[in-house]
Image 1 (cartoon, rainbow, N blue to C red):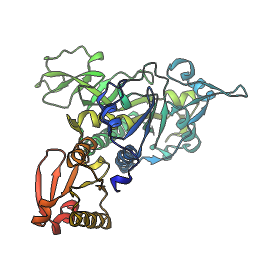
Image 2: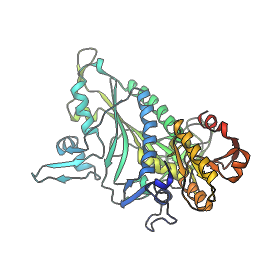
Image 3: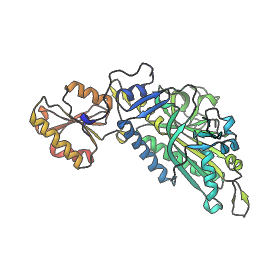
Image 4: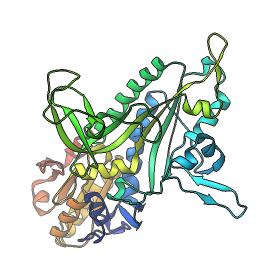
Length: 415
């Protein structure tokens, strides 16, 4: 895309009512537009990043056997009343129609996913099963905060699994845990699987996936020698104390932000809907159910919090809105303009996703905008590079600059 045609423009200042780094940078760089507290629209650059995160999540969920569906957003109230969530979950939006019927817009999908699975799971031969979707969620948050990290409307991947035994659920949990960690690694983050309470969904222990960041809303204790990590609110352990899992390391306290969770739902929802199947002995039994969530828009916000500097966003390569930011410093020189156009067409023809800053503006403004937008790799064409028959390649991550011959550009970008 030519930047002169890009719908959005950068801003020097963020709205005064935004205090979180992710919202400030994403608004200034033209990725999102604030509609009201906790509700944002995603503009062309933001939509692309979300799609790339979704692609990673979808890839990893498919690899572990998840089957993607698309569930209704508008829910009848009856299943929510059947599970008790209508009166017991305080963030549920409640809608009264002109016909006096009550509805809600989904803040989670157990009440929809369980009856769907019930229609198709009749025998142990139908298990295990994992269904997931990536869609919009709505929660009546009293105080939406932290930009896109905690909102009233957001995008989420939620997966629901059904199992014969607790052992099978535990097996799938371990498989899903590894897939989750791969998702975060591909998004440029390091996450820790953290023990936590089940919250509104279950009384059982659950697992949250936390990324260390000063913008985090939780305090965690983690071992410096093994993978043990626990939410500080439910632990009797203290920072500096010994790790009870490995008995070698000591616990450190840190701020962290949740980027995913796993709940062992047991048989609660199966019992609520009288959902049984024939087991291997021919008896009617309830399946064990699990819930696996990743906040897609929340994850985007956490990436910005963790991957940014004083100049702007530093997108990890796999979620960068474009693979390359091509910047032409022409000074009105027609030869440089022609060479920049030629390279842009060459990149496009070779399937390389590129944002081409072809604007007639000062070099300083182009570089400042490039830093703010944060595309992972930058190519510069200027009088200097033309003289040397080369192109300057700069990494947004570490600022390393390399002069490469024109003939090597495509190979270097596709290796």
